[in-house]
Image 1 (tube, one colour):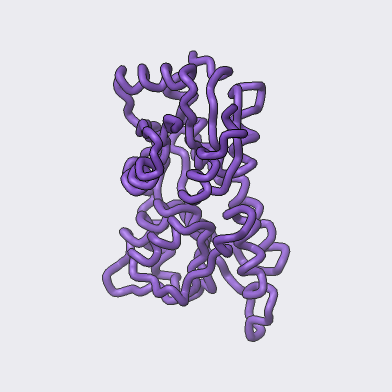
Image 2: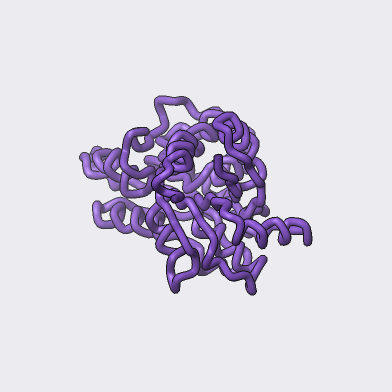
Length: 267
């Protein structure tokens, strides 16, 4: 069985480690995403105060859910639709107290769990008549602490474009900041070994690759192998020939396990 380098945030790692170890894989946790508080807490409060005006909120990640609901004023309840691209975000919404019937997400059998698949599910809500009113959608996202103006994300921009083209109003709120994680020299040593020893790195975000370059700017990744959970992530990894081998799969645990167990991928 392969050794997998798990780059998911520390809070999300245990469930993934358990599932991968049960499948017989060795797992090395090297989180590449860390999170800090929202840069503008007042903007979060304002979004909650306007909660009744939104037809739906689209959450870009489970961290967006946790940060947004952590800022909820005690007297307010979110009663509008909640849009999620994957099961992790849906699980976070349920944990936050959102009712299952309020949540929209792509079918688990969709080719990809992304904004495009979500739009196929939720577009009728926006395109259908809204009683003479214009639908308003809140996009809840994070920002990069080192590059806050460059961190909207391709998928989020694409969805916003579709919403606006359909006549919807789009509002944004930054619920958290993405930070560069703190690595020890031991962590860097493990990462350097995993760049050449045949380990497979799991990337579920292009931001994880951005942070890895910040942490190890001199490392050569041309012999490294990666499993990317979306074609856009794969494209970022192979740009300029950065990674030696990149395989793409869906972002759920079952798909990752299947990809790791596929011998043709890692011959």
